[in-house]
Length: 156
Image (tube, rainbow, N blue to C red; front, side):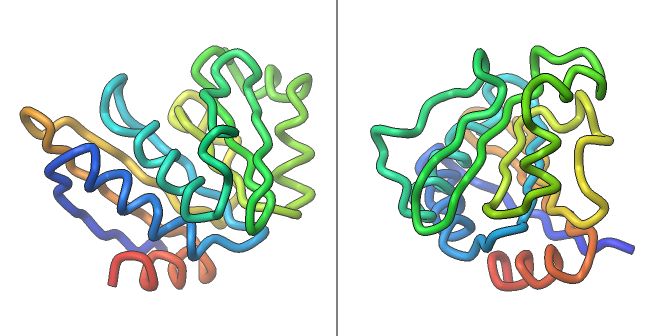
């Protein structure tokens, strides 16, 4: 069973601010998967999450070529991008599976829809869609008790 919330975001700045709020709430073991087309706002949201987790702005980069990028902040934050991976087997060489199992920090994964089985059973799934101009629709779905509590605190 899952819990779902939907929200309209009117600008990249609003998307970033929502990410900041989420970053302040993240705890070690949290897993957040992001889904959305190119330009849907995933990167704006991730940069906000990193800021909320107290990661220095200069450290935040796109992990497209590294696949997984670690950040040091209030908690360890691991940012992964699955766009260039073809299947679950490709994750073995990236170290990604060790991060998910280790749970010493929070994990943010862009393009989770490319390899949905990369998500643990309990996770927060965020889907961003274009809704005209700069407006985006964010759908947040929580799977499990901790993700549901996180979603309730983040988007009451």
